[in-house]
Each structure stands twice: as C-alpha cells, then as structure tokens.
Amino acid sequence: MKLLIAMMSHETNTFSPVPTELERFGSGELPPRDQAAYQATLGRGSTMAGMIAVAEQAGVEIITPIAAGAPPSGRVSDTAYQYITDCIVEAAEGCDGLLLDLHGAMVTDTREDGEGSLLVRLREAYPDVPIGVGLDMHANLYPAMVSNATVIAGYHTYPHIDMYGTGERAAQILIRSLKGEVEPRMVWGNCPMLPHVMRQGTDDFPNKALQDRVMEMEASGALAVSLFTGFPHADIYNAGLSVVVVTDNDVEEATALRDELLEMAWKERESFVYQIKPLFESVGSANAAADAPGSGPVILLDHYDNTASGGTMDTTEVLREILAQQLEDVVAFGIFDPAAVQQMVDVGVGQEVTVTIGARFQMDALEQQSEPLAVTGTVRLISDGKFTITGPMATGSRVNMGTTVVLDTGRVEIIVISRHVEPYDLGCFTSLGIDPLKKRFVMLKSRIHYRAVFMPIAKSIIECAGCGVCTSDYSQLTFENVRRPIYPLDNINSASLSEGFPESQ
Image 1 (tube, rainbow, N blue to C red):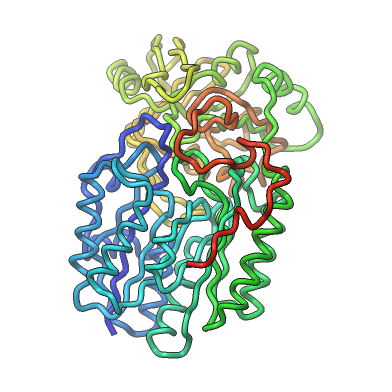
Image 2: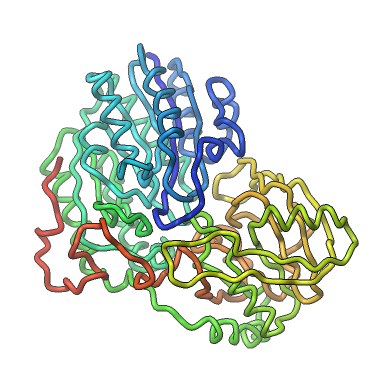
C-alpha cells in the first residue's frame, strides 16, 4: 500500500492587504518538498505529522511531495496555488490513497474554494483513489470538499491543540477503508450564521458544549464528526458554521447527528455574538486588574490585529493607548515592521533611538486606518527570531519571527518583528530573554490561540478593541459575496431551520 501525505494550508482573510505568494508557504523560501517535507513535519504537532505517524505504524509506503503551510493573510496568488496543487496532483499517480492536511478556508485570486478545487482535480485524475482530509475548525465548507473526499475530520479544539490527533483520526479511517474494514459515508450541512471568532473558543459556551457533543458522537460509533465554526473574515458565499458527519455506511444515522448539531448551534446563535467595549475603557481598567489579588500578568489582548486571522500585525492603537495611559512594566508582542527593525539594527544594541513603527499597510477594506507611532527607547536586544515551540499547540514546530528587536521605552518593552507570527507560545518572549510571568502587563496581538499557554499564567484578561482587518465589529466590513440572509448580519431569528440546512452532498 502506498499513500501520499501532503499539506496545503492557508486561512484566507479576504479583507487583508497582506499578500500571499509562494514564499509565504516556506518561511521566505519555497515550501519543503519530498524528503525535506517529511523532515520538516516529523515529530511536530501538526495534522500532517499525525497522518505520517499512523501510516508508518501501519507499515505502508508513504511519499510526502510537499508541506506548504502559510500564516493567514490575503488571497493566495494563483501562481502559488498552481505550484502547490501541481505538486500534489502529479505525485498522486500510482498511489493507493491520499491524505491531505488542508485548512478549509483557502481563497485564491480566482477561487472561493481552494481546497474543493484541488479535490475536484484529484478526483478527475484518480476517480477511484480514496482521499482522507484533515481540516481546521475554521473551515468554510463547500460541496466540492465533501463530494470529492472519502473522509473528512476536523479539529475539536480552539486553541487548536488537537491538530496531530485530527491527522491520526483521518489516517486511521482512510487506512481502514482501504483494508475493507469500514465503508465511510458522509453527509454535511450548514447554518445561516457567521459566529464571531472571539466567541468560538472551546473553553467557552456555546462551542464547548457543541464540541463535547461532537466527541460523544464519535465515542458512540461515528467514524468522524466535525463542527466547523467557520472563518467569518472570508467574504465568500459559504462562509459560516457547518457540520460534516462520517459513519460506517449509515447515512440515516449520519443525517440525524448532523441535524442535531446544526439545531444546537442555531439555537445558541446569540451566544456566538461578541460584545465590544471601547478601547479607552478597556485599557483604563488595567491597573485595577493588576492590583487585584493573585499572581501573574494582566493580558491586554489586541484582538483586532491578529496575524493568525490575517491581520497586518502593524496597527498601533492598543499600544498607543497603553502608552497614553502610562501603564508601567509592560511587554508588547508585537509590531510587524521590517523597516523599523532594520533602522534599529543599524543603530545597535544599547543605543537610544527614536523610531516610527507600524501602520505600513493600507487596509482598503476598512474606513478606519491605523496611524504610525513614534517612540523613543533603547535597543535592548537584537535576535534572529528563531525558536522551537514547547507549548501544546504545534509542539516541536520551528518559529521564525525574522530579525527581531526589543525596544525598551522605560515603561514598555516593544517587540518588533520581521515576519508575521502570532504569540501563542512562551518562546515569543523567552527566546528574547523576557519572562512574561514577571511583567505587570503583557500585550498580545492574538484572539483565542493565546489561551493555550497564556491563560493559565494570567491574573486576568482584558480584551482591547483596537484597529485591524480582524475586527470583531462586522459593521466595519462590507460583505458582498456571503450568502444572505445570514445571522447576525441579518435579523433572521425566526427563519425556518430547513432554509439553512442543505441536503447531504
């Protein structure tokens, strides 16, 4: 038995001005291929790594033509998409099965459904070859994904600490189907709703209850059950919450489970709506939170500008407010500004510098724009920005922040980076000689993933509505392509459930 195992992963924010060319899939170079792809994945906490582990345990031959994963950003260039998909399709010849680590929310220059387009092409070239797919919880499901795959498995956690397990689950089902032990049958459907990302965490209601029920269904015999909360910052027709259920040749049972989950989600649609507080008020509550009993830093969450949702990571409004309200003993991660980094590198460690940081990107999707921020401080450290993740999300993966500078203004240590990286691991700080546990305040450009390591050490969390294309205020965005009506963009609280539940594909 010969299996192809490959990765093509990107979450596309169609409102983001950050370009997504091929080099973004390879940390500034071409994405690793063949043996290099295998080595880059082995031992990591990724879906592809889980797939490889199961395949090797089963003693099957594997090939790994490419491992292409890029941080979320704007639309993927058609050139990059063609390169990656050509690599996968050409390598699939002669394989008995395919295992694909995809995302489910890839949008290209000319395609709303990048993953579905790949699966259609594979199915046309290899009509009888089983295909197993692992998807992110933020997948925006399309019919082409389901109708051209043999089995789909999605993450059950957000923060995504079960990527490896998702790969294992997809691989186990596919291999069992190849051996004739099971006959996977899938149904799917979606709800007319766009859950706010800030209400999608799986340690919060309602997603915790939904994912708990998903896992109960799998424990009771379903091969794979996945509830995708969807990625709302993709202005595409099928953005939003969906469910796919895989059973062993039991469409009736799969349909019942699907409908149960969709009805649960629809019933709790109001709980998926995020309530926003003014920035001045949020930052203004920080000192009282820090003075309260307990240990650990207060987390100031700049969640409108999270690069892992396609943010530019260079908006300055939350940092500006922190400086204006003169908070003391703060570390801020971070500001993406390669030009400012180079200016501080030229000045050198230990030297004082006045530098203008941030607001390098024009965010055409927003009326509000960020403003550059002039700061004066001492260049405390210059680093190559590389470290290995030790936390529970993507464990063992190498992170490259690019050349990184720590600028100390006296009150605030500002980490300025050259590559987009979300701070969901302590290494973002410890690799720079900073212990976040010893800080009074930690500013993070993150939304939910920070919870994997920072929530356990935080005294409290203050969510700060700044500026950025990850805005939690849908009124700041213009949705032109998403299906309508859809909640909460439209008041459809009394809509018939059947309107939102397509027949199984």
